[in-house]
Length: 108
Image 1 (cartoon, rainbow, N blue to C red):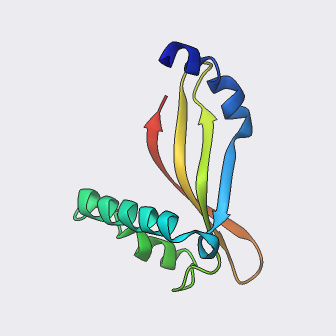
Image 2 (cartoon, rainbow, N blue to C red):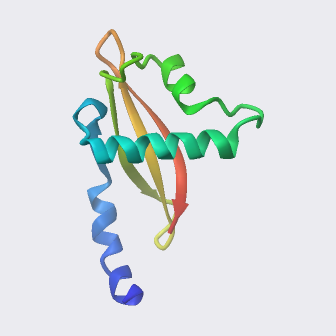
């Protein structure tokens, strides 16, 4: 099954990114995001340069209620066979520009 599924990956990477406003997430999706943020905080806390992920978003211009933040995935190829997938937060700044913040979590 994995061999068959892997044949779909090149087409999937053409999709490149998927994003949703945080405020539009269903309760299950919001709970999953909160769980991931908590896991990230627990795993990376105390390491140099690793903020609490929410603090990092706030420093990048996110509002406290995350109403100016979209969350999703994007990917790019390192080479023809290896791709990196990111959980990405897109933060709309006061001037209207969008600032991405990505965290690599899988290399395929």
